[in-house]
Length: 296
Image (cartoon, rainbow, N blue to C red; front, side, top):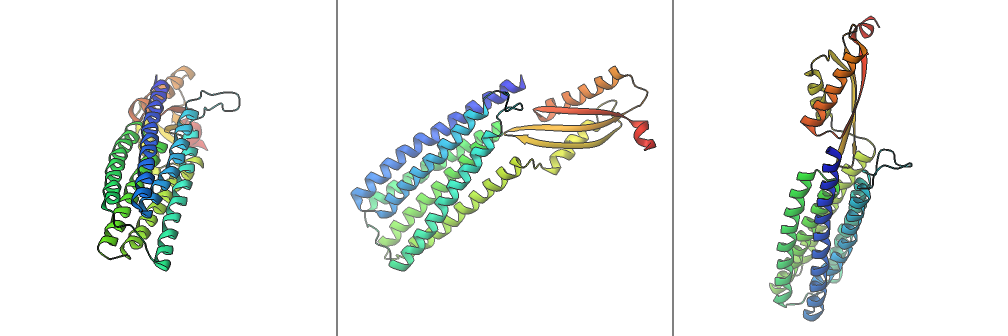
């Protein structure tokens, strides 16, 4: 039952990625067309950046689809980590966009800004920022509900694009106010924010791919196990992530006089408690007698 729910969550994540792709395609076309018509280089560049974001969103969508593939001979634990790989790919693309924004801003400082004074382009930029913010809110709430790394990465990308569009508006208005330095200054700040976000996504993805896990969550799992009837001590406990799933390995100590059947019953209760209370996807419990451990 839990596995079916996890697959349903991935399906919901797909919907979020599809909404993002459609939005990016629409905004990219609008920005490029209006940018060419109005002579706004900032708006046109923003539209081209959205084209790059389409690639990142497609990577997230592919990752979500691959994560739904069942276990096979070469992947006995399933394909859950494909979602984490997709998040890492998205972080690389975001970093490239962020660095490009910074370099373009520095170039404007050197050669000067020649932005159009057409206010239509500013309104388009503001409209784009508002749309992307609402897409961000949808995706970040969805990511929290389904505990999806890749959807959360997509949401952060949405927020970054909203900031880029705001930077575009500031640049256009700066030209109106005869403040050409305002555009590149804002662009540098936005570019650095995008790079910081990309680093955070990369750090989280690499942490999961190398089987890193939050110590606080492990302590919570340990407390739950210790409260289970029959468990005398937790000798060892480890955990790792498979996409949006958690797998726990625990070694518990029980009374040495218990029968094999009784000890197995306790381990089954431990598994059930972790799955029900903490939505752990899979639990492996190894049982050892308490007296033998005490003698050693």
